[in-house]
Image 1 (tube, rainbow, N blue to C red):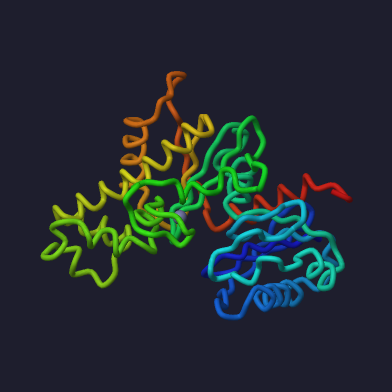
Image 2 (image 1 turned 135 degrees about the horizontal axis):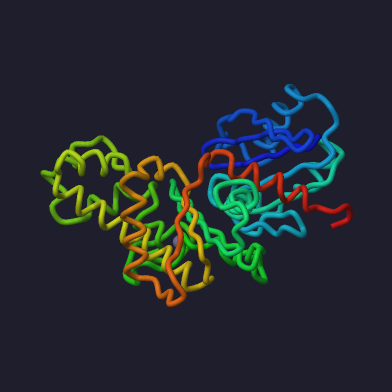
Length: 308
Ligand SMILES: [Zn+2]
């Protein structure tokens, strides 16, 4: 039996793999103030309670820059700040007595989609996960792009989208996330001229769902806000296309619940911008965004060899 953990900022998804079949557990809420160790322990307790047998291999994915060789976090977002320098391999050994496979969550999500999900069999594919933040990853010639410091491909949310833009949590300025990440939409949209007096301004909070709802009801401002966000997504995807030369784009994340409106707008936005003389990019949407990361960990464990 093998076990997997997807440590997200909001919740933690876990599961076990028995005879190649993933069974999901949870999710459980992330305890943001409790630190990495307590969150890992909580997830481990859930696995033990439901599946008391021996775990032979563990897979963990989380946000941040993951050194997949040392199984450490080089840089993390605020919720798991104390994960930097934490010895995940030792924790796993003490807790389960087994080796560990680790990856960044967006990398794992794309590996999951390209091996067992909507992009199965595709060798040249980039992913954009539209949620609280914006996650990206790239697989080219069948291999995940990793780079010298394990950060290639995963920083698409921090592509510069406005050289005079707002400060970002990463230390940069005008990153894509500061314009179109769900966390920042309230601020970025309410700054557009015409906001006050719009139907959208009466919504308690502003997310892509509220923008689409008001747009569908005929709110002119919300149409402009929708197009601003789509422009940002499309520019980010175009940057990924120009950087990595894929044939397929996989979209995922909570925002894609509005795919009926978002997908055709993104396709149009990217096709207007991307330089692809070889032909047309294909766009796919993850069938079950909640499973992509766990499936990717399952694939990484299948590829794992003792001693690696
Ligand atoms: Zn940034």
